[in-house]
Length: 400
Image (cartoon, rainbow, N blue to C red; front, top):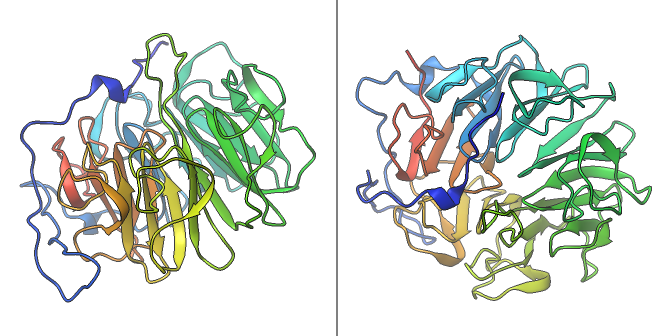
């Protein structure tokens, strides 16, 4: 079954938007705005289960609840509910599987079950070794290997086994599978080099990972070769993330320019790669081949590189975003770009944040298991019951 291909190049900012009105607080960082109310007649977020993890994709968003059940909302065909219909509120993924981790990419979602098996759904390649290019329901990744985490990018996916071995599958034209070759594989292939990985993160057309001894490597388009290449600069990282997007041409020969970010063991954030839209957060619109410190003295819990923008959560659970803001994904109540971290409006505290590989929207998860999203919403990926673009966080609500 062939699916529609999603591309941000097809979308333009909406002329008429629902804006959150900035307000004033005792906050030296930046002004904040009150939380935007849910759509009229929508059920409140309290009717939803408590969510424990979150994954924003290209035109969809997914999450896990406390029982391990997966929920998705947004563009039809990417939701795993067997229907192929877009929805603007969360719906259960079909099949009754229970997951311990989930990752949403540009057009695909994958999860690790309680049995440490990987399943994927949406547009392919799904890693199932089959001829189909996508599935409306979860399908098992070929090989029966056990994995402890998975990460979905634009058109490739990577996962790490309990034995710290990394595998990738999907498109590999730019070397993003890390095998030393330009190849496509619809089954997992081992990443070259024999390194022991804590986590590997798939981006647009590049991949980055951190080994068990905190050394960061990248491979693929502009960030490394066709096999793991050590990130220059000598810094150690406990976490890395790589962004990027789709392609700038119809022939898929010119990928969007990627950037990557990492957090050191001392909780300092650094970014590198393309910085022309301010996504490196160091105060300029300059690119850098080596990691540069994100402006400020904050201690970071998480930093996530998206599509020409970056978001993070500090140890104090305060969310910041920076970079391009054409779709409102920075959550600052405007379309203004920022070269340094700017606080997300609303005064909410988040324990994690997610911006998809294509980075048109951003979502955050609170300590009480509620999800708030902001940015582009043409497919209902914000989950607020509307398809209205939002410039500040709105609560994900339950459907009818």
